[in-house]
Amino acid sequence: MQIRLLKDKIYSKLMLVLTVLSVSVVLVIGIGLYLKSGPVLDHSSWWTLLSSSQWKPLKGLFGFFPFVMGTLWVTAIAIIIALPLCLLTSFYITEYAPNRIRKILVPFVNLLSGIPPVIFGVWGVLFIIPLIQDHIAPHFVEFSTGYSVLAGGIVLAVMIFPLIVSIVCEVLNTIPRELKDASLALGATKWETIRKVSLRKAKTGIVAATVLAISRAFGETIAVLMVCGNNAVTPHSVFDPGYPLPALIANNYGEMLSIPMYDSALMFAALLLFIIIVLFNVVSRLIMARLERKLAL
Image (tube, rainbow, N blue to C red; front, side, top):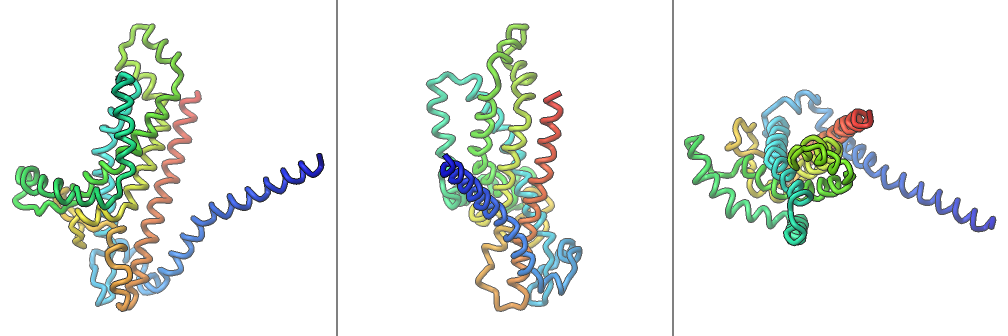
C-alpha cells in the first residue's frame, strides 16, 4: 500500500513539474524576444518605434505603426465577417438542421480546418483578389489592385470559420434541453428561445471561441502574406494594401540580416505580436470571468 501511495505522489509531482515546464515556455519566449530586441530598443524608445511610420532599415529607421495597423485591420475585418456567419451556422447545425443534413455539414466544416494555409492563400490570389479588383473596389474607389487588407480579412475569415463553429456548436450542445423546452412551453418561438436562452447561456463560450480565433488570426502568416500586398504604409481603407507583423517577419527574416539592427527589429516585431496576443487573451479572460459571474447570479 505504501509503495502505491509513494508511486502516486511521484507521478503527481512529475506531472506538476512537466506542466510548469510547459507553461513556462510562454515566459521563456517572451524573455527571449525581449533580449533579442535589445539593440533596437537601445537605439529608439518604445514610443518612437510604435508611433513612427518611417520604415527605412538602411537608414536605421524602424517605424512599426503601419505593421501594427495592418495586423489590426486584417484581424478586425476577419472577425467582422466571420463571427455572424459562424453564429448563424452554429445555430442552424445545432437547432434547425435535420440529422441527415447535420451529418453532411459537420464533416465539411471540420475539413476546412485541415486545409493548409498556403491553399487558402492560393485561393485568395486566384478568386478573392480578382473579385475585389474587378467587382467590389470599382464601386468605392478609383483603382485597387485587389491586394488589400480586405482580401486578407476575407481569407482569414474563412480560415477561422471552422474553429469558431466547432467551439460554439460544442457550447450550444451543453445547454440543458430542459431550459429550451421550458421556453418553448411558455409560448416562445424557436428563434426567441435561441435569442433569450441559448445565446445568453452560450455567451462565455462564444467569447472564448472568438478569442481563440482572433489569436490565430493575429499570427496567421502565409495566407495573409500572399494577398495583403505587403506595402509598409498605414491602411486608411479596406482597399489599401497592408503589411501585418507576421508577414513582415516571414518575408525578411534570414534574408536581410546583414543590415545593422535589422534582425533586432524583426525580433521586436515578434515581441509586439507576442504582447498583443497575451494582452488580448488576458483582457478576454477578464471579460469571460465577468460574464460567468453575471450569469451565475
